[in-house]
Length: 298
Image (cartoon, rainbow, N blue to C red; front, side, top):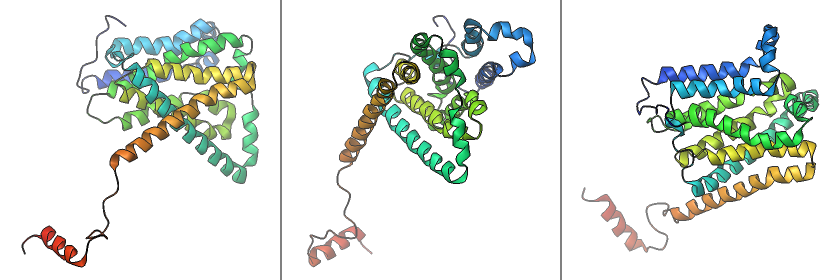
């Protein structure tokens, strides 16, 4: 990205360019679902991996690079030690939350529409495509992770870092875009798709939070993203038990780190203040004197 124009500190003038980049990204990614069907000659591009990758990832990267510049990516390798801990912390905590949400939704489906859960047995189109060369897709998952994190966390979220708009709103917005553009889950699983999208949203939010607290590190979130996808392919094609370990050991480790951060913060707060107008160890006379000192002259 050397030589690209960095983004300006103020958001005002750059916002239309940013929105243009987001719009191009949304269209480029979604185009794979309708352009080849509407215009047969486009299949020459979409029906081969290099062409499809260029449209889905290359076009958004070129768009943001020209419209926004490399500014949001300048901290891509910042604070590696902190990024590993924070990445695992957010990834673990929100993956566990995603699992809880999924189980809760599954219980609701079981009551309201049990037949919808059968839709989850439909073949995943990405998994079907990977069946012929699983080891390639296991390794290539890390390339996809790098592309997607550069686009979604680096530019779509990172544009707002340091612009005095807070980080939670942009994290929510970029995570909604990230989850929503996985359209094939909706077209594949239909009424059961809501079981999947909350976890995608929380995954995106975890990566945005890691980007925020590390000042822009993209390496760790790209590796975690790639490992998430690679473990899924490994579980399906190579060894289900080992794949589950590869998937959930980082999540459990991250959950433990998140718990340690929480407990350390609680310890740092110290004991809660005494409740009421006096400490229970004070004598009645001390209580009256304490009340007079606090109230001051009348």
